[in-house]
Image (cartoon, rainbow, N blue to C red; front, side, top):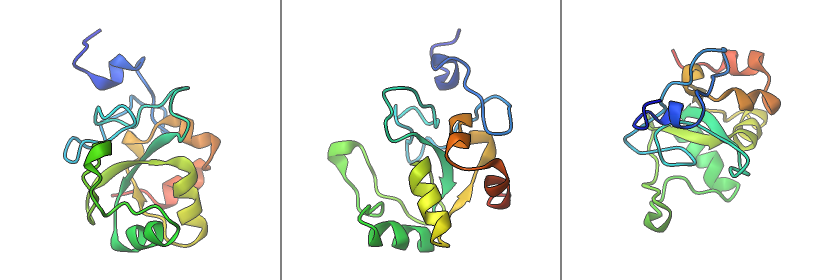
Length: 130
């Protein structure tokens, strides 16, 4: 096992399509473990498993519901997001945005299979980043 590989470090995680989990973003550095991947596990109570491509509509929605993702929070190693940034988002927050008509696009290859417990694959496929 290569310890410099964040996916291997977390047990060879799989994505929602059944393949090997791809990295989401290293700039900004994302993931519950801040390793660039949407890896998850029992310690990740928020299930930060959905790799999104942020857009203004989603960022505004998130701000409106009390989760400002645009403002940097260095104490949490959070740089603040801007449209076009990729980020590992909580599956329940993504579903909430989808239900409100403000879901950002999803990078399927970088979205952890655990997401499927919260969001059906058909919904994710309809919001896939191309």
